[in-house]
Image (cartoon, rainbow, N blue to C red; front, side, top):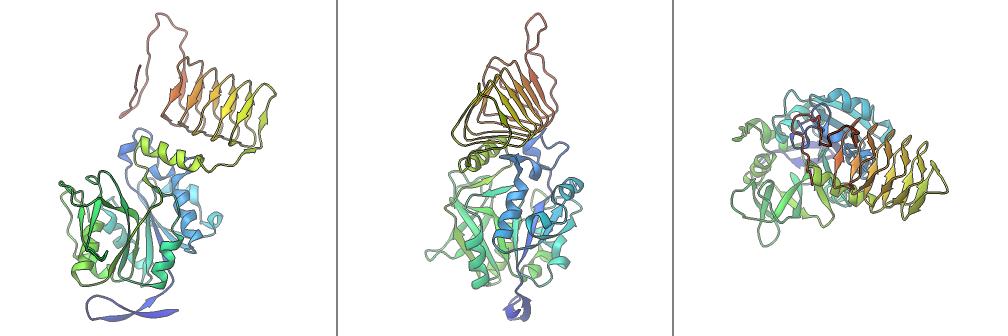
Length: 373
């Protein structure tokens, strides 16, 4: 199906109406180090599922099944996890970006693959609670040069923000404003027509050396093209920090339904919505949901509190933990104090030492953080 759309000022060109998806899965993930020192930040699990998977699922739910994934240094990990996209009901093409030079540069990287198709660009480490079906349907029904999603926030100083006129039209965008000019943050889901490809070649790097997406959208506005905004009421989280990951984990676990496929002995108690995956075993323990226990994990003489996700093949014994994420193959045993509000990486060992004199003994990687009470 082909429609005629404006491409630049006063120019008409044929536009392919097949809406594609462009998912960004590059970037350094510096705010989640050391967890992301050797891994993709988009693959850090929330409720035992990589955050990237939620973006892919939401695109497919919105009937966007032709998806390009921008990759960086962790391309092999992303490709290994996602494959050809068939597990999600999608067809995936991988688009390597030579360096993380900005969101607008990602569009330049994908230009030949995108062609004349309109597209939805979804940041792979963003989480949008209500999905994108209604916003995608509006963009399909009412095409424009760009459609952006906004969310009211208390502090927009680290985000791009939008200034609207009284009728709700976008007047201007500002990246990380020093002074508060708006509480409407631009979130990590964008819709573009092919007009954007006339803008990106003329962009110049910002002070941080990147081609900013806010500059690209502002250029569309300055060119007199329609840029539409919708304000999102659903939960939105940029999962770039530990507390953001925990909040996304809390939101997803909040809708959990009980499912027990592993073994739970008679001395154990499950309270509320708890998922026990196949091959997991719970012995002499209490699990208060919402919580999920990954496949192959062993839980003995342990209390697991609400909003906790324990990954696969972990071992927990003689400990208490709540409101936390524990990644695969980690061990927590014989820890007297309750662990809370924590993000514990892969193959981590946390245990009480029998050595004397008693002391805190640590082996930590770069950028680690430990709170001792």
